[in-house]
Image 1 (cartoon, rainbow, N blue to C red):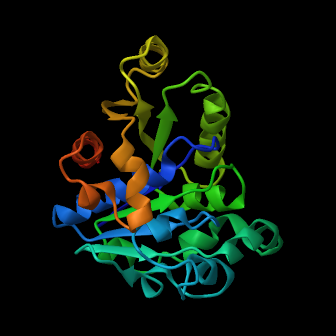
Image 2 (cartoon, rainbow, N blue to C red):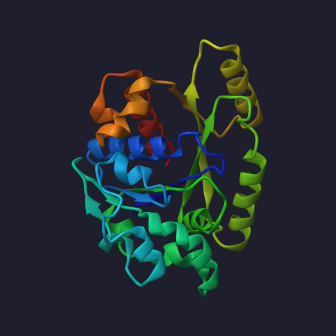
Length: 252
């Protein structure tokens, strides 16, 4: 039975999509059937694995109709990795979803045979706590929270954790935090060191041991339509995401 992870943080630019894409690629390359679901209307995860923004069917079709995720999954150039793409039309879901009955559970109801077909499913959430992120959290078993090691790192984390508690209480009691992953870390700066220490002190049991470094190869990989693990397998970013994938799998 597969596990579903939501990659969530309402703060933008913290590495959610990068974490989702590269963790999914690492798990798939280890031989496990993996599904990446792009829930962001910016379509960055879709493009990062080499698919166009107008790819159909998409996750929008799953949320707005009876189509199930497994029927909207597209193969990628990476063996064992499939993706349910996003399109710019998904932006309309923020307005449309609240009007639908059971709007918070649309994605969960669209899972279909996902747990049977894929050992790992990663839901790449948009930078908000709107209807799309709520749908992901209701459908997920675990949440991975990317946290950038900069000044506003803890800004909004309290709000996210409050939202998680609400969803656990009202809609998805099995939801748990798999961990927080520190991203874009520049160990040469005092600021990054201070933020890492503060996050680990606040959440000692939740923060992954792995730290994702600030790395040029990670930033340029999406322009080639590739995860960084394919773009430059030996760079520090690739090695860090490989370590993270192992740690995620070990935590379950």
